[in-house]
Length: 233
Image (tube, rainbow, N blue to C red):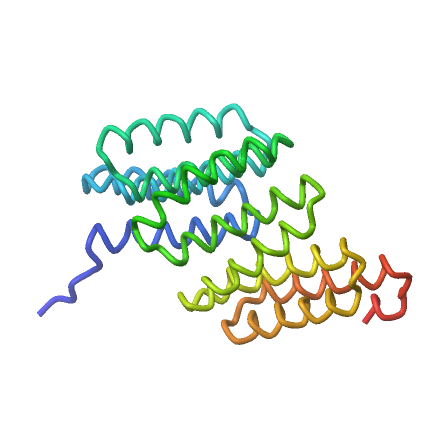
């Protein structure tokens, strides 16, 4: 009996996972190509939520490459489709995408306005991982507004939600935001402990990029507090 290959849905899902991985590694050209492929497959499958996931990757790539008008257009078009279909999950995703765009534009207050809209959808969906991602974006917005206490509060809430949803990658990134907030508050030792927590979480989930980010953030903390020898380690 001949071996049965993966279904079209499995291929599309695998391409979306790979596109997300490449985007996180900032391999923009490759991520965009794979996300485009995934989006076309999801369209053939008549899977709008899958297509929305691929669009989210395309928006992240556009933001990374500072193609902000294109990113905004993609997000608004997909948001309009999701509203027409009463697709709350996709609406939340596109609102988060618009938060990314507003942060890239240096408009944290507008980003926080979108966050309030997205929060309502995520509460209704009981999406803990999605809520954690939203709070991480909120933390970044507060950091951009030079409000370390609000940043710290949002990041700690994100850690709790990521932990409950077993999302080690998100939890590690949130710990790095805690490090940033605590350093901004003049709490050097507390900041270092947050960086160490990020590394431990990323080790547990085999997130090598997260581990590198945690180490880099700790090195920056040492330099900020005039500890160049520790930074070299």
